[in-house]
Image 1 (cartoon, helix red, strand yellow):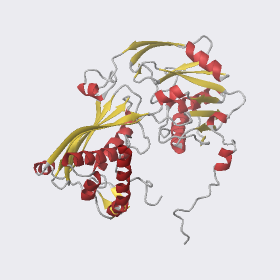
Image 2: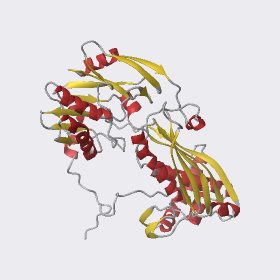
Image 3: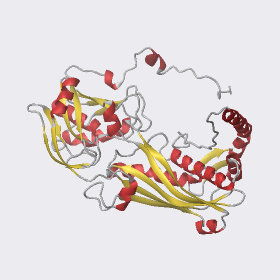
Image 4: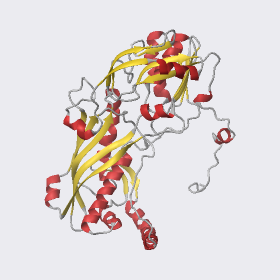
Length: 438
């Protein structure tokens, strides 16, 4: 068999269209008679919606005019940018002018912006919440108390993995066309079949039982286009209702406000080390700011926090962990998958814990990893139940060690010249596929 690793791969599928400017994205799709949709979004992070007044004669639909839909604000807005109405017009500029004429009367409510405030439960992120702690779990293995009794050093800290906005090059958008029998939707989505299933479930009650979803070229996504957003469903419904093609495309500002954010986890912990630098145990609380309390979304998103807690062992021999996992509702854009969905957060947490341990013990960051690294594994289950199909971790460290020392030498040279320089070490595993047979 010819050697494939290291050989260049000839890209023959999408490259010619993209490099010659012939790639077709959602915004490039046009039909005669298309109506452009622009969404009116909440200007408050938390408010009662008292009334919405549309321009006279405009094709304007509020949440009260539309069927019940997850994520659409009807009586209470719970994050800034949440859609609450939509206008249609024969060109995009007129639609945006009409959107600016829509008058929304709000009754501002107290906003919960950070998890420390949310945990006090004085203000609620949604009026009907009994608590801002909407989900919780526990990840516990081994005897943590015994591990800390044996400790030579205990390190305590809070590690924050900040909230990020995915911001793909191409914002979210879709075009919906109904020919009287079949609904066809072109969407900048990562979830073609999920969108198709959602539209069939939603529109079958209106006599639409034939739905086709097309994914044209997509200008980036990184997880943020997996969720089925209300805008996609609304324009599909309006295409059926009006008999006209409907086109919608987010501005960059709308994208920042309304597309799911990522990360936003913090770990308050203490970690026990022996004299040789072996990590004996970790105890702490992992807090995830889930953002807006939309149950159908946060129940999925919370899985990223439990994944992070279970992956806290990393690639190391850690046999005692006790972590409480809390999912907290706030009045920020909801959290969804983004570039790793819990795995990068866990890697950052455990690698930072080891570095803090090395600093406390006065040992090198590379050496502390040599002490704790697991050996070669095959079909290995971690103590927390995560599955690693294979890995030669100690061998990888051995191969990397000369390069590490060379980087240290270069670092010292740069520092001698008054420049800022540093060297970091991290050992990362990634999911290659969701199933061993994929």
